[in-house]
Length: 471
Image 1 (cartoon, rainbow, N blue to C red):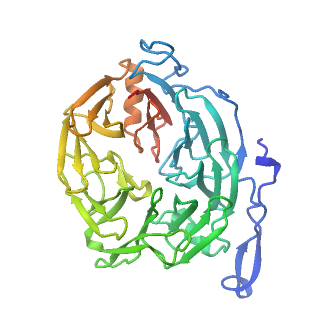
Image 2 (image 1 turned 30 degrees about the vertical axis):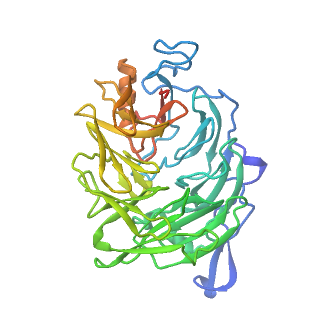
Image 3 (image 1 turned 60 degrees about the horizontal axis):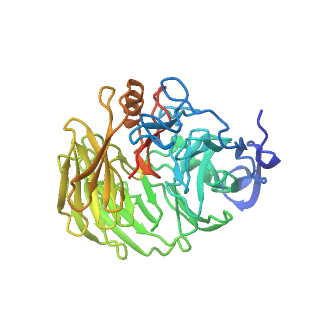
């Protein structure tokens, strides 16, 4: 049995009290949650460095340090440096989600369906971890000042928020998203439809949006700054970081409109700008807020969806240019819950798109193709990072063929260097498995991280696989 975090007693989930305000419930009184200290969302299992062993997916402890011919105590480029298993497997059928991945200077912090864990990016050592007292519902796409936010179920409703410090895992604050029990009905997962709770952070604030409302809170103390109630929307989307962008599909008519807003978290009622698109123009997903790039699918999603990429003026919301659909693209998952597309990367002036056998680069000012890098014709090649005038393009592994990274000149698309990954059967199998999960690879601090970031129900899948990838 675990002790509640910071020695406090978790709230009793069945307690309610009637307020003096009008509304639903007996005697015309609105039902509200009894609001206890709200400490105990997370059960602390704070670990010292190396507190848990890290195991590979196909047996044996994960390798750290030198491997595959490395020198000077450094792992060889392309070798598997460490792997981490998930404690509870993500599962779409049971609504167990693993959304939420954040970074510090030295850590990758990963949310799982029932816990959050920090790993040393370079070695895989587990630095801290805590259990969630309810199933994970949502996680902020970004962090701000070392703070991230998650939401977990509270009495079957996704209404409990917790902000925590990425550096040590300590809780900063916990709050109920809404005080009114009847209002919280819209936060039940089975009533979300496609308007699941979304969390984003921007400029020292948390932004939460769901079908029936939205609000902002200060990241420093969780105090509510603004809120808006609305009739239920069919879908919502948001992204933070450099800008706070919200997308709502609140008009159920086929000839209705999609609304895109650039928000000031301190004044939700007065967007910086608002843009409306005809509903028939399709579905949107936010690729980047700096530059401001959206994916637009004129029709239903799925593996055969055709996406354009639309660059918006960040000051007005008006379309600046468009990169039209190309049949070579293979984008993986583009859907609202993840706010983005697997296989698309934007920097200040370019868009890099994955394809089967290719990575393609486009000019964000003109929408025109700059170059095409040709790789293995039968495998996806995904842009994963841009640094120092180079873009790293990852060709995914299969059980029979090892993966590799090509470092391309951003101006020409020519390969400056290509690194083949480990060719052992175990490493190929693990890498291939992690390459096909819901999530996308990141290249951070000389490690290519294949991260389970979705709801992939595969008992053999892991949580993180780290490959040595020095620039």
